[in-house]
Length: 404
Image (cartoon, rainbow, N blue to C red; front, side, top):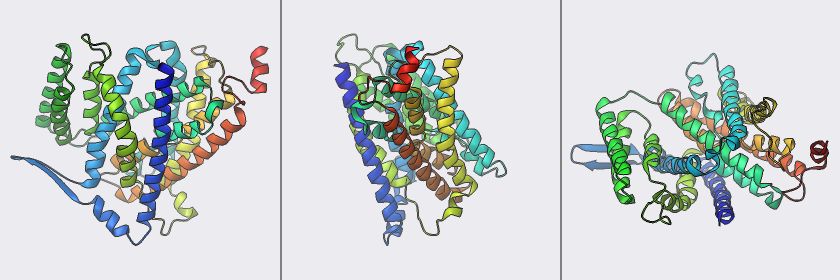
């Protein structure tokens, strides 16, 4: 049952990655066609929700980035909670290797970007853009290799991506907030207190949590803290276990119900809304601008150095062991795949230059596209070369090393 669930999850993520690619390609086509103005006008369409004196008025683009992406982060939060309580993150020994990889994979790309943009205070706001990994794309590329991929490699990549998402959540919470409204924060805090009370009292009705969660999201949106964090906070109070019916876990029900919507609707919509890049006037010099080069170098160079170097350091210090069936060359291939930062990198980029430096957004999109594509092809090539004909076999060189 567990193996079947994992296989279903992996199939869902890989197919979601294909939809992401198609949505991004469609956005690029529209942005570079006679429909470019219509594409921009669609995303700029004002959408309002008004209840009495309370009003939320935003263009469609921000409803997607602040609203639909809150659902995505809600799903990420549900997965994090489940993994911490009873999954891969519940066993410390299994977490150390991907944890070191995740820390290196966030720190090194950020340092590379910051160094290349050290003379531009506005451009420096994008330092976290190349620190993110897109789990859907990375797993999609990994799944192209089929049965040759050992389970240990899949688990490493999934755990790395989960920890990477957690790091992105912390970065957004600390570094990408605007002027705070204490009144709105107080309302959001009160809503969270109600949710905690409901959890403590054993409330299992999902609609009750969702209703209070919507109030919390709207309050966080008005507070200046990015609204997607409300999704993570809501996920943390959803009960994992139902004492009255072990088969009806509210968290698992929500996780299973949301996966298709997020993978097949929300993330492709986000890609469609944010990947539109005009290729007019783009040449080699465009890639060499500090922002674009910082993103490309961060994703392609920084990610592989950080993830692989962090994992190697953990084993050298004796804090972790390389799992059976995982060669160093295969681990390096996964480190390359971690440089696919599409969804999360675009999201952080939209936050970094939401107010100042909007002229850098095109450079950010170009850097993400180039860095992610190069990382995907390089990672696939390394893994295809390094993996044996079956996932449970080591390449000959590593097998000899293991037998010594």
